[in-house]
Image (cartoon, rainbow, N blue to C red; front, side, top):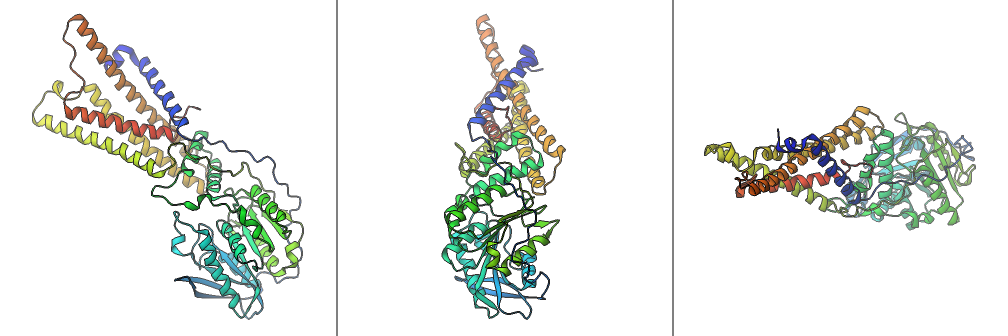
Length: 520
């Protein structure tokens, strides 16, 4: 039994542990921004469920023509870029569509296959250029330069003898919808633009919105949400993601051609209501009334249902392209399934002290290095003492203290590893739109329970030091020999200091990421 428990019992240890927990909860709360999303004040009401577009009735339906697929190489700047061209066999005088990638696609032959085949089979020539490698990294995007890349694909499509040059437009999806308005600014002669699954808001705000939606779909505890602004608002270690705050709003008025906006109602990663309103408002203000919005029930981010492109969307898209300009002003302006958006996608508050990923990484590495150094010194001391056959009572660290100094960093590192494993597990569940209460709630309970054990060990250690000091004072007052010191020797002090300092840093990291939240 430790001196702490002998003198004060478990009640004192529990009190000290609770004090540590409250202190860490306060530190975790004030160290960074909280997450308090704003509910959408008013949902968008869709009165017409039929998504078909007026003026498209007489156009060639999907599947009419055989599709010819050709791989070509486009010269963009100093680079050669693969591109896949799909065209209707034996048809001349066709419209043309250039596909603009989202963040998750880059190959020319694997992206937009369903959309390109549907369009080509109805009489539209399409080209899907590959994304240049430098724009496939999370760290680097240059939307201005990417717009010029896709403009080269537009120029190529206009040179094809079977394509009518002034009927070439753009199909942009997800991240690509930040690029399409730049293309329209630089080339007002684009015949049309389709904005599919458009976030509209800046990338950082969209990422935070998507993470929030995914986590809510997964059913995670409310305390986990604090990590959203701290992770999304932080700059990556080593820099990068300068594009995270790119604002497309100033470029939306450049869309002076017919625009089709499409969302899947099961796409929880996009602010479907907010995006629709922002686009309509911006283009109406800019004098463009040729804007149609369609919502597809049960469809996800790529307007797919059960892994396949929505047939209604394929028919609407091809009919709209082929029927232009008549279909550009078709009615109703907004139609389809009823969309729902719980919260607004807004700017993400920046972390107070840990906005730099480099700072966070350095702090973590310093903490782990100190813990490691303490462990190495302690191991070396034990080897030395055993070789010299030093009695246990005369070794450098008191037995109770030595046990706590082993348990303290071990439990802290287990908590840190458990937190990382938990976040990875819920990320996988969120991406797959799955729920698992054992992982979501059980995992979080386990992480916090081990984190609490760290504080119990720390409480016992602190109380051992307090009791030792009290015992020393009592012995001096009574003229007795004081108890031996808890830590003796330079090596023992170095090991103890490194272990305590390193563990303290790890515990503060855990507090920052919410392990010790108490509703503060």
